[in-house]
Image (cartoon, rainbow, N blue to C red; front, side, top):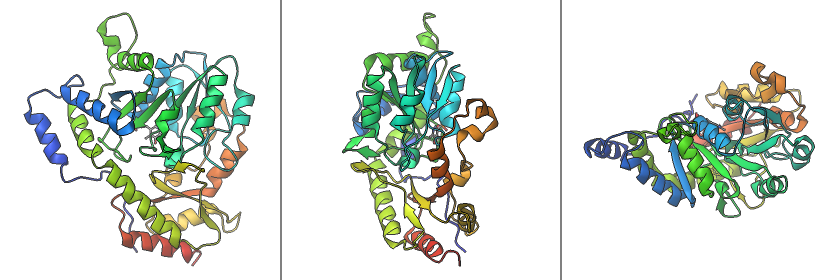
Length: 364
Ligand SMILES: *Cc1c(COP(=O)(O)O)cnc(C)c1O
């Protein structure tokens, strides 16, 4: 049996040079060091964004975005229950109420009919998570948000390099949050960043993540990214487009070779380009043998699943979110039918051929 590596900590040959150079520079390693400014400049260029703010985690990015868009205690935020705990807990931290809205029947984006039914006068923002890096119709969600006078926040923690109509997904959001945790396509170990076209939102994120600039006039905490991870991030950003091309060609090789009649890729939206953070499969085994049995078959053969990692259930099944339960049948069906395959830079061609072989021969 082969063990397919899970996707922690891909190293690049020039990581150490970048880290050594910033330490040796004597510029200091705080969040106020010039290296963080250079990293933010590189992020703006790479993601074609007007403003970039480096922060200490994806969760910090979400908290800052919620604060910047004016989400206050008692406000409501629309969010899919097929997103992640990391997406929703920052809403609770803001004292706001997550209002679960269903996904579309055939993709992972928020369904506009469900959103229309559940939006109220207290709704302040919509928080969309293009799960596993597959683009969702953020263009239509952006129009919907504008029509209702609410802000669109993107949790793009999986979606570095994912495109819709040839534009980065952040282009469709009022404010976009990324994680650079070690599992994500761009890694600084721990870390994150916020992108926004709006100067006022950018300044509110900056103040919130820097103790209100210590002026004592606005609230904030310390959510800055340090100079050392910024240096690693700036160096790795140079490799991102090559990494994405590699992920896409590996995904194509895998998907072309998959021949199992009950296994297909999840829907790729017309005009959407996934980054292939992972490959998402939709299974059609019904009850016997079930999707669970398929996932177990793969994990017991060394092929890890992110759906299994996240529990494979809608978020209102977790005790902490049970008070916010709203039925979302499409999201439940999607999660019950989905699994993922690793396709990160350390997955080899032999690994891909092995995964294809295990799946094509299932249930053998
Ligand atoms: C990883 C992740 C986060 C949180 O990012 P951290 O950097 O770990 O705080 C948020 N949302 C999604 C969808 C994620 O995958």
